[in-house]
Image 1 (cartoon, rainbow over the protein chains, first blue to last red):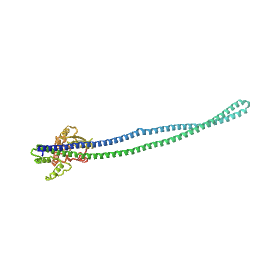
Image 2 (spheres, each protein chain N blue to C red; image 1 turned 180 degrees about the vertical axis):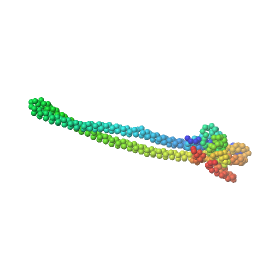
Image 3 (tube, one colour; image 1 turned 60 degrees about the vertical axis):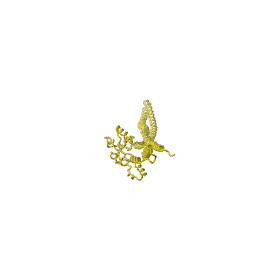
Length: 321
Length: 125
């Protein structure tokens, strides 16, 4: 047996309520999902940005560290080596000058030895003459002959001592000359080595800087590339976030449909004179159309009730007044 | 951080997506769910926004009323106000224009398009 109208009306109300609530919950779920996705996108941006900043900071720190190492460690070490070498050079130079001074003074002794030998020779001759004269005067000159003989021996001894001294001075000068030569060779070798070592150190320093500069440039280029990638990511994320706005458009359209379903629920609940033929929904349709806020809503409505007026003119999506 | 932008929309997804997009481009963002909350914040803040982006259809106070109220305030008279709304009917657009809105954008708007419009209304940001 056919159901009575109130029961049928009750079923229809229930059906409409279910449809409306299903729609609203679906919108709510979409909103929750879109919010989660947006938070994820935000997370992608935050992670990317943090990486870029970390990289940039690490690069700046390492460059500062290199500069500090160069100014506080490498350069002072090179200066220290140069200073030490200069000190040794100066010491050897001073010693060489002193040796040269000694040699000059030893050389100055040679004329003195000549003079001493000359005096000894003259004294010897004088003593010989004195001995001849003493012999000539006979007994009376015997004492004088003894003195002359003693003077001659002294003269010979002086001459021998002078000769011995000359010989020792010559030995000394030979030794001094050898030392001076050694010192000069050391000095030359030291200067040559010092210059070569310092030049090598400076070259090493410059090479190190050049390598570090090249490495730094590579890293800065990598940073620029990373920033460029980050910008591209930000651009894509912005576009994606813009696309997410579809959810609000869908929400408004679904809520409008839910509002109509609610109006229908009320109308069905109020119907007492038979279902559904006696249900006049013209005013509901009119209200529905009046409350549209989107062109797309209007277009769908018109498509269904095609006898109505045409589509409204499209509005440009972006317009500055 | 750069200028502050006041974003007014009753949709949580719109508020979050706009806030995220703008913050990624160095803006500070203040959000409000409707015109009443936006207006209260605007009156109380010591750092007024450089730009307002508002929806039209909102509970409590809609976007058109918000534009009217902001234009009546000395600080809001020349403030750029962009309307970002669903593809509304022509009369809303005309009314927004009459009330002094700076521009009209239809959802969904791409991030690059939104930023290009902001570049035009805030050339020195």
